[in-house]
Image (cartoon, helix red, strand yellow):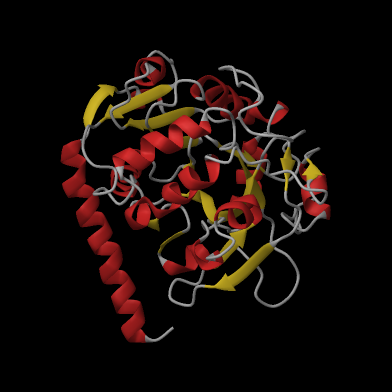
Length: 336
């Protein structure tokens, strides 16, 4: 990387911090329990709106993994989800009625809160419908992973987002709060993915899966990105640039092996496609707060009118992380 590009990226990172500081004035404290955070605690950061049905299982899943504290931004929920989050003893909540889009889709708010509270902590940045899976997660807590990453001088950890779906129309099986969504959405595409490299930031760009084939078959380049870097040993100078797809400094995006072999990686199981999704897509399309004039949600709205069934004869039923490694969707690398 040349000196000029390095300077440009450094300036961009400074602008990210400046934006985050300005947007912090849009946040109001609803419940601040961050004094409970101890050195070495593992933290989750998330932004949500009207996710009351998802939050009970979300919190329990990450508690079971070994997360110590949650820092949440409630973007003007009206379904009681904000009150539910506030009532949890290990959750700190900030609220805002301001534009999600104008805060770079929540990135500015979380960059600010991470700068304030996540320094020198391992942090997971995930949505309420994203569930982190890593090698040996069925027998080891997340602290085993972060301890190994730290001992290996690895600062960031990549995970491909894997869209999960039911067999049959998504409206056929109702989801109940607190239950495992993957009892319903237990299928995924084992292939059908394309990978490119983003030369500016050095991260990979992955697209494909059921959303690409069902909603973006005619415009695959517009399909949602599936590459994520959700787990980072955070420092105040870091900043996410676009969701958790990429961050600065640029070196944090190299979560893959460039010269052969495999780096340890994980998966984010994505529980978007439940019976609640049609109403959520309609709400988000009306709000117009998502990327590219909510083009993604326009595609969802049009496609969902046909009550689609994402299942095909090539679909795989989810078993565990070892299955995902065999399929090449994640890797234990050299972590034994």
